[in-house]
Length: 97
Image (cartoon, rainbow, N blue to C red; front, side, top):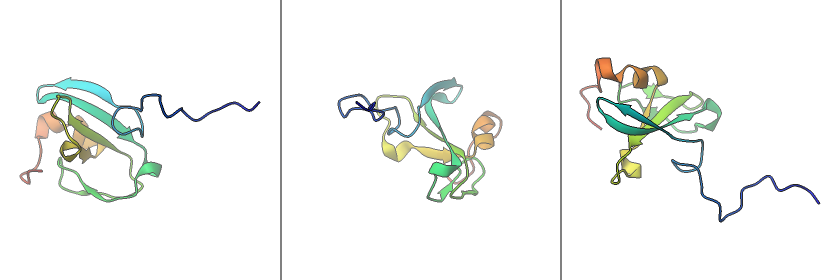
């Protein structure tokens, strides 16, 4: 009998929607759930709140959202990896989400 490689429907999905695993990060600006998104999984253009530049399809980046009980899909933000790492020194741009 062949091996079943796909997860069963009753198994819990990965944090953050099922594409990759989210990790918790504590920082001076709060607690975040963060997920790395590989370039081959990106199909849309996003605007990075750290530098206000576009994240084009095919570009690996980070998705972050608050780790509180009230976090929603609308609170997810797509960041360049470098912008996410340096947000404590720079903060977001003047354009607020």
